[in-house]
Each structure stands twice: as C-alpha cells, then as structure tokens.
Length: 122
Length: 152
Image 1: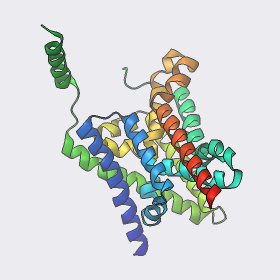
Image 2 (image 1 turned 120 degrees about the vertical axis):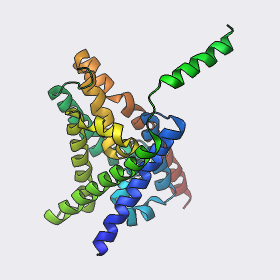
Image 3 (image 1 turned 135 degrees about the vertical axis):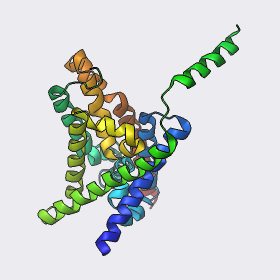
Image 4 (image 1 turned 45 degrees about the horizontal axis):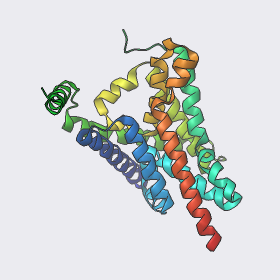
C-alpha cells in the first residue's frame, strides 16, 4: 500500500510538472527549446537553494525524470565539485554529474540517425 | 499602406495560419502522459535496484536515465515519439525523454544533408541552448558556493 502511494505521488507530481510545461506552451506560444531551458534553470535554482531534495524525497522520479532533475544534477555536481576541488569544480562539476545523460542522448541519437530515415518527408 | 498597418495585417495572417493545439485536451493528455513517463522511470529504477542490489542508488538512477533516453531515441527513430508529442505536448517535452527526442529528431530529419553538416550539426539545434544555459547556470551556482565556502 505504501508503495502504491509512492507511485501515485510520482505520477501526480510528474504529471503536474509536465502540465505546467504544456500550460506555458498554450498561453505563451513558447518553443520547446525555451521550455527545456526554463525547466533546467528551475532545476538549477531549486537545487541551489536546497529545495530540490525535499521535493525529490516524496516525488522521486516525478521530479527527477522531468528535465528539472537534469538541472538539479548540474547544480548538485557543481556544488559537490567546488567543495572537493575548489575553483576547478566550477568548471568540472556540472557536466561531470550529467555526463551519462548527455553522452547517452548523443550516442543513441547518432546511431538511430544512421539506421532510420525521416518520417516527415514522405 | 504604411508599415505599421502592414505589420498588423501580417501578424493577423500569421496568427490565422499557425497550427492551434486544442488547449484543454492536450493539457489533460500532457498530465497523464507525462505522469506515466515519470512512473516508467520510477519503475525501471526500482526494478534495477531489486535485480542488482549491489549498485548504488546513484548508479541505478544513471542507468534509469540512460534507458529512458534510449527508449525515447528509438521511438523517435521509428517515428512514434513525434506522433505522441502532437497528442501530449508538454507531457513528452518536459521529461528527459523530450531532451533525448530533441537530439534524435533533427539528427534523423537532416541525415540527408550528410553526417557532419546534417546529423552532427543539427543534433544540437534544441539541445545546444539547454546545455549552454545548464553549464552557465551550474558554473554560477558553483562560483556562489565557492565564495560561500570561503567564509564558513
């Protein structure tokens, strides 16, 4: 039962975050690139002020799967690296923490671009 | 016709031509599709921790994201994800799968312009700004924390 409640929170918070994105698109005609940038910056901010972990504790993937989680990882990486490496951490922290995601996206995009053809121009 | 009036007429024409997404159904669809994608992520994460108890929570989370990114890239390649995007809007853009889609989609689309100028250049049309702003803001946060740590 407890697990069901946890999953329900993931669904509701995740859905709400996505719905806020859709609401922004409908009301302001904002492009998807700006949506992604906005949510990344929100994630960076939430992590920087220390709020992200509180949301993450009960929302789990609901806040981590949205790109907000990507922003939070960037900030978390930078904060951690600054603590352990000093000034160097400012330059290494963000991308180190998000390396898996960015690399995976580039690798799979390249492979599937070689395999598949465009569907829009038929 | 003076320029102001012409611009107004043009804007009116453009507004009439741009595709309208039906607001309320897509809002509802973005909620449950986005929620389900997050739920899928949580499911994969919990399954990984159950199957491989030795890996750390952090590694399990990284594998989860890689799997989600893989699935989104595959669905984009076969043309399903963009159709889902028309149906669910923000529900498919905001999750990390939307980031994956934003890289794979132009790569596949501009493949015909060659590997370097097609795939590799167009790959970052949407992801580029995301990575640039992400790096800039995380560096800023790092700098602030560096200064804070100097004084405590």
